[in-house]
Image (cartoon, rainbow, N blue to C red):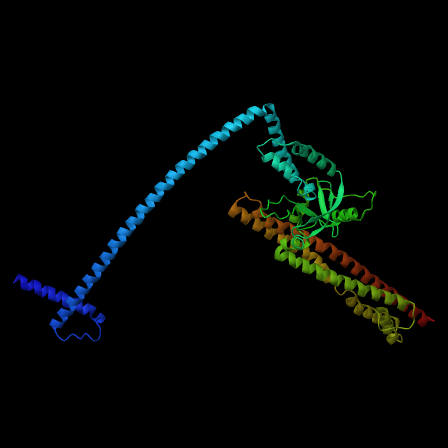
Length: 465
């Protein structure tokens, strides 16, 4: 009974396996009964056993092959270790020989060893000084012999020892000279050569454009390319400094001119890169600063045009004063035409007509004065607004990042100060233009009132006669 159950279990498992693998059976192998299914399962099991046996055989062969390779690698490692021990023994022997020879050399040198050691030390120190000297851009290879002396373990010869004091003397002599020579400039025309003028060890600038150059020690090139020591400053100082450079390049032999000298040997000139120009200053003021600039430009342009208009009107009025015939193109002529239209009336009516004509001319003369005055008043208020917003940004930066880094607060402080400056700069010319326009307008109005009073007086006299 138990064997029957076992057979039934195996048959059931085989049937289930066959059902699972049914999709993998070829279409030609049609299963028509349980017996054929059992045969198919037995064939598949035999095939699987053959494949597993082939895989195991492959694994065993590869295992034996890997073992052989491992033994071969161990043998090579042992051979290399033995060779390394022999080489290390040779190296140790050579090192002992070198130490023995160095000891013999030291004994043979005696006091000369300390002297030449001092010479090597000073050669290294002086090489560092010359590498950082601006004069090396004129003599780029003068420190090579000092480098050989400083790095050599052998005793320097007479030529190398003489090179130390000769380079010192050359540096002393070159420091008092203003010379023009040809050198490559790194960031101009891909390192093209150009004429440069050197003022001692302090400053150097191009002869053609009077552009100041910076000096830097280049890294040693392994491919033997020529070293480039000079580069054009990103931002030129301008003004009197560049003018002094131009005076040096254009000076004749024996003449005396002021020369630009940077005692920090490039530090002061390089600091101009951090000095903002006008556009950068305005950008520091932010959006409010740009509004003030636009207000200033519009107000100044409007004020100048208004001054020109009032000046031409004043000249026309003065010309009308000398002409008895009224012209419609100027305020006084129009007032005189108003009198001509009402001179048949009584004196009071004539006076009222003239006052009316003057009142009509006043808005034309005072046109734009209120706008200039308004702009002059708004500009400082906008500057104050920018100051407040800039300080708010500063306090926010302090609250978030603390006070350890001043650069984090520089943006807000710059906006606060720049907007105040721009507001004051805008208010001053606008007030001046308003004053000029008001003065010209009052002058024309006074002339109109004066001429009107004269016309009324002459009218009354003519009626009294």
